[in-house]
Structure formats: structure tokens, C-alpha cells
Image (cartoon, rainbow, N blue to C red; front, side, top):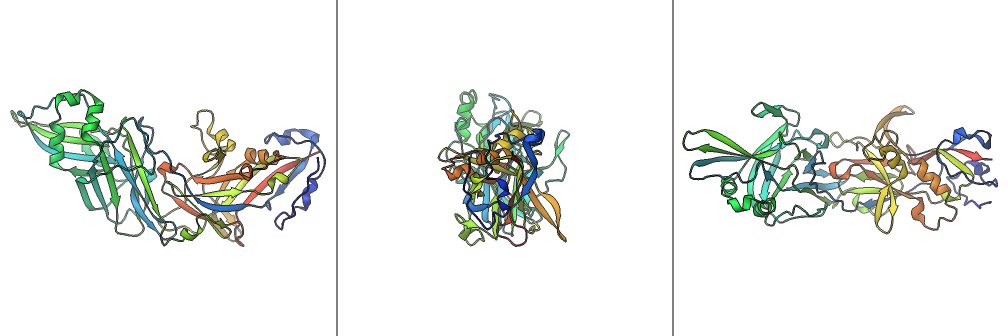
Length: 449
């Protein structure tokens, strides 16, 4: 079949003999193994790429199983991406059911919150002082509910705070009994500690009753400095993340400890993004040509469209990569560690592209090395730049093979920071019309004879 090409300024590879009549080869891989049925390998990087800036959809952030390795908590003031913050909401459970505290025989001493730092999620300037507030929720966080990045629960009772502390996420401290690690210590309100000590036996007998009684905690962190910092805590670490209640036996003045843990309880992160006065604010919802932006959490994503790619014919895709060149690094706000490609599914949903799924494997736990999407240093002319290469070979072959393609969404992918629930990082890139390092699709293909 012969197709009429739309002639574009950027479509300058001389039509490549793509009007040759022949059948298509749907396989995106292994074209080099098909022998004489293929001509020599061809290359182009001039296919039209259109980019649009969009706000991310809300995302489920709660964790009951202990699968997440950290939760974000903090606030960043970013002149490019605006003000973005994260707050932690969490339940906790006792080390044993029905401890049966006999308040006639024991004396409450103190209640301390310990939070294990997670270095991999920390972002921003940790050399400036931070402030943390801990609140008791006004309404119970439900163990069985799902919560999203937009979810909030009222919390008006402050039960703990620490002012002007300097995060030390790499400093090893001793917790107790030989347990050492990186953690933050926050003294909680004595009245709340006595409340926990006085929970009656009937309530202790059921987790659900305990959860309803304690309601849960809200943890907030911020800084008066710019850009501020996003901290990260591993609440699922049972050694270094806990609430410890200290008390003394009246009979022999023996000091004792009873612990509460966050692991295997429900907890979630609330995200907030305020773009007022930021560089990106007037560009959201617009087609971008000079600069592109992505941000984790439920921040910003790129919608990337290859509007005329379905006009290609009679080719087998050997390799297709979306190439994005990052702008200059902020001294504190470094580029994202991992980008991912998703595609539309149905009216509102998005799913990983097949190239991503191939890399992750059937269990979804494989390495993304085969996909790419991570920052790499490349020498471009006389300068060294940070580049991301995102593979979309299978996706692009499906676009080429879609003869009818009435829906532009078939030629659309999204660029997202990954994983969004655990990354506050952001990156800006040169756009497709940049005269320096334009965003582009690099395509290696073979013409089918």
C-alpha cells in the first residue's frame, strides 16, 4: 500500500523510499536477524516531536504491607517549579496485644518518636535548620481504606515538635540496646503518653478498636530557608522507626520500655503543589518548544506526541529512543534519578509502555537498565551535559503499524518521574525547538524490501 506523506520542515530524510509497496513487519526487535528481506540499517533524528506540560493525576500513596522504603516529609520553595510539600499520615500498633498496664504499679516517664532517615528520598538543602510538628488526628485513619496524594485528615492537636534541627541523615547514633543507625528523635506530649498507657483492656483486644482510639498521627516538616528540604523516613524499619513509651516500676524503680511500630499499619503521604509565581505556572497546559519540565510527587509530566509517525510505512524499528538533555543543575535541586514512559489507557488511566514492562519483567521488580531513563553524562561538542535516553522501540513500532490511527493518543506517551510517590525530584530539559540541544526521537530502522 502507498501512503501520502505530510511534508514537514523537520521531516528531512528524503522520504527514505518509504513509499515502496510492501507488507509491514510488526516485530520491533531482531530486525537485524531477518537477512536479505531487509536493507541496510537507517537512522534519523528529525521526526516531529511535540511536547505539552500537564499536571500529574493524583496517585495512591498509602501502604499497609510494609512495601515502601520511605515516605516524603518536607517543603521546598523552588523558583522554577513552585512550592511543593509532603506530609505523613500514619497509624501505629503496639508490640503486643493487651499489655495490661497497671497504673497503680508503674509511673509514666516519657514518650519518644524515632524516625529512620532514608537517604535515597532526601532532597534539597539539609544544611539549613528544619522544623517538625507532630499532630494527633481528629478523625481516625482507617486501616482498610485506600488514600491518595490528595487525601487529608484534620489534625488540630499538636503532641510533639522539634524546632531548628539540622537533619543528619548519614550520622550514626545509638538508639538503645546496641541498636544504631540514622534517625531523628522527637519527644512527644506526656499527656498523649499517659493516654496510651491508660487504654483499657477491652480496647487492646482488637487492633481496629486501638486504631479507632489512637486515630493516628500527622507529621509535618518545613523550613524558613530557600530552597528548603524534603526529608524521607522509612516508617517500615522496625529497628529505627517506632514510638517508645518509657515507664518505671514503683516497686523497684526499674526503668522499662514499651514500643509501638508503624510497619503493617496503614499510612500515606499527602502532596501539595503551589505554582503561584513560578516559572512553570503560565506554561502548564501549553505546548512547549524551548524548555520542558517534569516533577515527581503529583507534580508535572510531559505529554509527548509524534503526530505524523503513523505515516511511516514499510519499516522495522530496530531501536527508538526519546532523547532529553537536562538544563544546568541547581546546586541543591539535582535532576531526577529515573524517568519512565507511560501511555493512555481508556479515558483517564495511564499504564507503563511495553518497553518499560519488558525491562521490569513479569514480576515487575526487574531493572530498568534496558529501558534507560536515568541521567548520563555525554560530551556534546565542547561541553558535558546530562542526558536521558528513554527506549520506546516497541511502542514506536506499534505506531508505525497502526495504518488507520484515527486517535492521536495512539501516538502519545507521557514522561514521568519514577517512582512518583517516593521522589520529590524535578528536571528541566531543552525543548524540541532548542537551537542547542533539542529534544528528539532517535530512530534506527530497516526498510522492508
